[in-house]
Image (cartoon, rainbow, N blue to C red; front, side, top):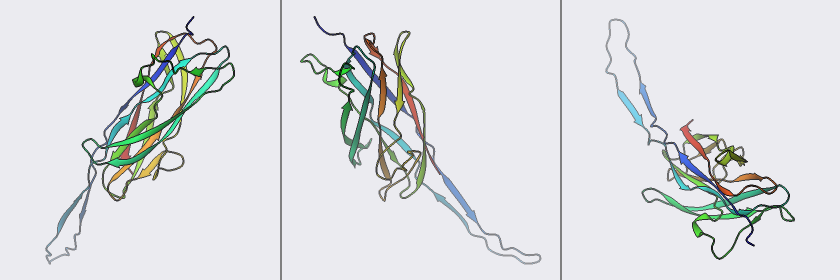
Amino acid sequence: MNAPRVLVAIFLFTYIGSAAAQNNSQNNSQTNSSEILNDGATISEPIRIYKNTDLNFGIIIPGSTAGIVHVTGNMGDIALTDPPIAATTTSCVFPGGSGPIQYNGINADASMKAQIASLIVTGEPNTSFSITISGGTSVGVGSKKISVQLDPPCGIGIAPAGNAGILSNEGTRGFTLGGKLSMGANQASGMYTGTFTVLVCYN
């Protein structure tokens, strides 16, 4: 008899930030005199965010006891294509024992393997930006739900709390988002999906 399988995936949608501009002027005019004024404007590159990969917990066989499945990983160098891309590596940790385990059967769809979420930000070089995440607290199918706890954004140039970053000399920055899935004992089978949003803005 085949063991029941639970397929879990979170599909990530991203938000594109807006351009930033700064205006500077000087006015030294005095009563009964005149002065030539200089106008100036510094136009910054718009800040943009690109989805590189979605977060996917893969195909999981539920256990007789509850357990947490944790997807982690990291991101490689960014290739400045249009859109920019980067390779990622993923690690999926299971509780072991009688808890849920990963399904690696010969019929497993390669596109449904565990995958760390990764994003790429572009904009004005050496500029700081904030990161805000909303949603992503659960995945579901019909009335069935599984709770999710997203990890903070992680990567080179990203604050430890994951709420801010600094663009590189090339005006790019990549980061990853992992998460913990709280599987119930004998979790009902199905394709569980959900979404979350990532917003980046110049500080």
